[in-house]
Image (cartoon, rainbow, N blue to C red; front, top):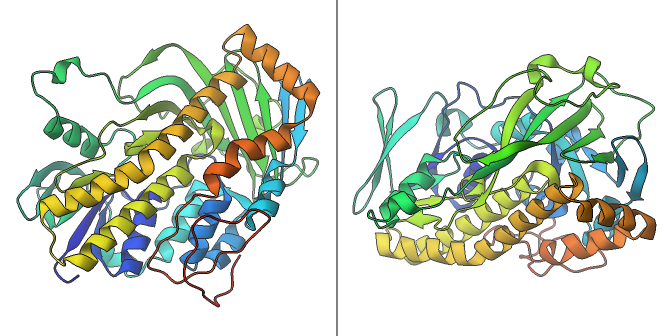
Length: 429
């Protein structure tokens, strides 16, 4: 694959995982990150579900995951006033079904694991590399940076987040200019969230329990891991907006719910207030530009599947790209578009289903109407939360892809994975 080079925009979890997959496939790449540093510890917990644990293990990162993460086993739900709603063991049940745990770790720790274990990371990842323009040609792309420099490659993979310039370019290049002004916004914000973590832990709170409060207009989630308590408070906005606004205010003024027990212990520098956009891009590629992760499909953090969805899309994309390069070391734009179209077809329905599930869950637990509140309370009396959780997650999880060019034997639980790979004797998580 000499001479073929991928430019990855963004060094978040999606971008760095994509870089790992490209490295394993023997495909040259460079990652461009606009921020001055890669590992940033702002934000809250990432839930790493079994399909993502399996993929990270396939990349040989299981020991690093063990070092920085805590198993999540149970979930407890209650109202704002503390009235119990449900208590289940959904995460432990999924481990029994699939053979891999669900783990929690900070976004910063996941970035640390991915960056520090990436081959040639010092030369393959550039910081302060703000892409301001993407220039496309018949057989290459040029990415113009804010400092005036230009990076050349064969394709661009936009892992550049919800405000993705790559997505905007795809929409612009692929749309009818006469109808461009009538297009609906791809990403819409109806909720905003405060993310944070504490300086210490509460020993009286169960380790690895995922706690969630439900109520009108606002919900919260918190988890105690080995290193800290992580929390999120989500609040419905007065009206939805498609404004491209990144809120980075520290504090609690805009979310009026008191976290009496853990707020005084927060790491103030790590508390951040952000819009939580939702949406599914119509087109994920054009020519030699393709997008993954939040750039293509974005949901609120409530269902905890943003990172998983991003990595599953990146896995599928690199599989398709690797397959195309096996046939032709210098594929034409038309051949690349065929691979990208196959990638979108393979992932869009599944990603859209997860976006839709997140949409429903977010409105369900924030009791947007009397029907949601009544159903929430009714469900708590039936005490079938674990079984309902398995019905919700298991069918999609078992279909999750692996990197099809890395020998690997999946661990198995009660429910077999639909996709496995070549046997390997390497120890697993």
